[in-house]
Amino acid sequence: MKEISHTVTQTTLKDEKRLGDHMPSTKIDAFFAEFPWVGKFLSQSSVRQVYVSRISPEIIGRDLESVVNREVVRTEADFGGVFNVYEDRRHGEVLYLLDGEGSLVNLDTVTVKEIPAVPAHRKYWICGPMVPAVPARQERLERSDVSGKIDTGHLGTRLHALKEKADAVRFILSYWDQSGAAILYKVPKGITLPVWIKQQIDAEQAALKEQCQAIDFEVAAV
Image (tube, rainbow, N blue to C red):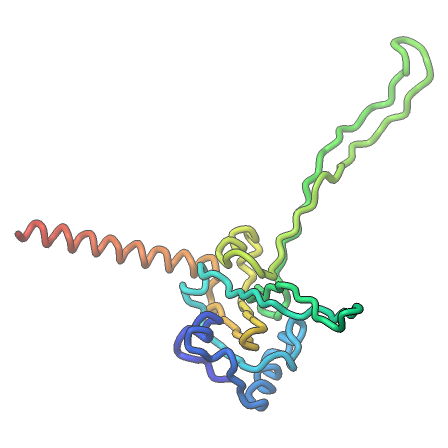
C-alpha cells in the first residue's frame, strides 16, 4: 500500500469534490489484506476509497465532518393514500484510536471508597453480646469509560482524556459514510503520539519566537 505524500482528510475530499470517488476493488482488497483488523470496525462493502497517510498537525485539532440529511424513515398509509415519513439524520465522521495490533484503545477507570475495618466489640459498654469484626473493604462508587471511538469533539481532547493510555495509539482510522473513505493515519515509528504532538507544539513555539526576534531586529535597524 503506497503512502500518500500529503495529508488527506474527509474535509479535503469534500472540498475537492471527491466524495463520490470509487477506487478499483483491487486497491480496496489490498488495503484490507494489509490491515485485516480494519474489518473489525468497517465493512469492506461500505468502503469506496482507501488512503494511508502520516499523522500531521492538521489532524489533531480539526472538526470532524458531519452532515444532516432529511431521509425517508418509513412509509405510511391512510384514507388519503400512501405517504413518506421523513426524519433528519446526522451522518458524522468517526475516528478509531488503535494500538499497534489494531485494537481499540480505551481507558476504563473505577472510583472506589475505602471502608476501614471494624474490630470485634461488645454491643454495650461493658456487657452485651459480641459484635463480630468487619474486615476492611472497598466500595465502588463510579465507573468512567473513555472510548477510543470518537464521533464528536476533537481528537486532541480525547487523547488528553485517555491519559497514559494515549501512548498506545499507533494508528488513527477515519471513516465517513458520505465519502466511503477509510483513511489510516500512522504515528511515526519510535515515538508516542503525545510526545509527537509536544514536538509539534515546541516547533511552532520556536517559530513564533523567531518571528518576534525578526520583528525586534527590524525595529532596531530603523
